Amino acid sequence: MKAPGRGALPLGLAGTLGRTYGRLTEVARGLSDADFERPTRCEGMSVGALLVHLLYDAERALVAFATPSTEEPDRDFVSYWRDFPAGDSGDVSFFSTVASAYQPPSKLVGHWAEVSGAAARAAVVALAEKGHKVETQGHVLRAADLVATLVLEATVHHLDLTLELPEAPEPDPEGLQVTARTLDGLFGPEAWDVIQWDTTTYVLKATGRLPLTEDDLELLGDYAPRLPLLG
Image (cartoon, rainbow, N blue to C red):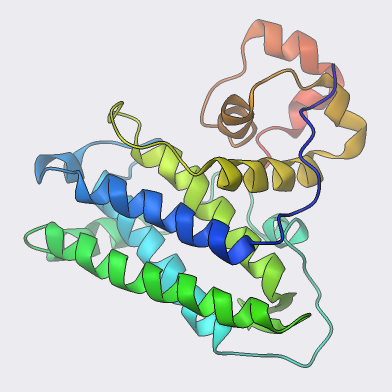
């Protein structure tokens, strides 16, 4: 059985990012103070710490959108992730310390909403120029590729945040598709035919959020050691 057809990246990527960030804001605004201490799927990270991590990613996006480049891209939305090995979640203690400084935690939610909203609006401007290129983390990407990486980061961490929040809003469906399309690129076309998971399960298992079962290992065969594709 082939992997679900996902096709190319959507044309309205800026809208996808806006909705993806918006769903995260909806989750964050529904949290009680105690919820910020809940665990997530990121080892050692509380909900508050992970929201700080996302906040810093949105800030990085703003810097990137304000740093245009005339150089040729050396990364795209798939190859960008090869610089980030599985299990690399950044400095957990740092994010936890920063999260604890926001008192009450609603201040963190307000900061996230402000910065992520600005990043989503900046994406609209960046994508209005065809082929626009930006610099981030020592690499050059087309703006569309950068936006796709932001969508993946936010979508995966949305699933992380809601580990113990079953009533929380789910990630944006198109954001999930962009994330799955990226994982397809990392997994490799020769491995696609063995995938039989729905999109959310694919994202969780391909990023190590859910363990592989014996049936999964049998299904994947020689491709199993490729997982997780990223952390």
